Amino acid sequence: MFCVSGGYRGFYSKNTITLTTKVEDYIHKRGGTIIGTSRGGHDKPKIVNSIKDRGINQVYVIGGDATQKGAPVIYQEIRRRGLKAVVAGISKTIDNDIPVLAFL
Image (cartoon, helix red, strand yellow):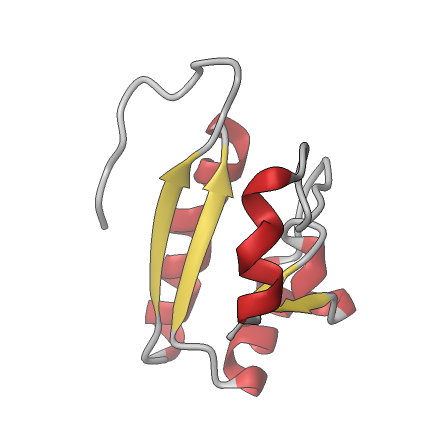
């Protein structure tokens, strides 16, 4: 199993972190984020191309309001292409700026 590092841009820059038991054993002891972040827009076609090319069938989007707004956009493109992948949003924000969580 792996996670994409560097936010949405990590999908098309091929940034990943392999999740091993060794990594998982200490992850909760570190401050900040090991997966990194990014600001700004994302390239939906490149992200979905990466999901398809890597054979990813589950995408967990972790972040605040702006990040969560990208999840349904990506899901709609996955669906439009007829790919078999799901997208789930996981709220992670210090701003408490997600008023409602919607399930696709």
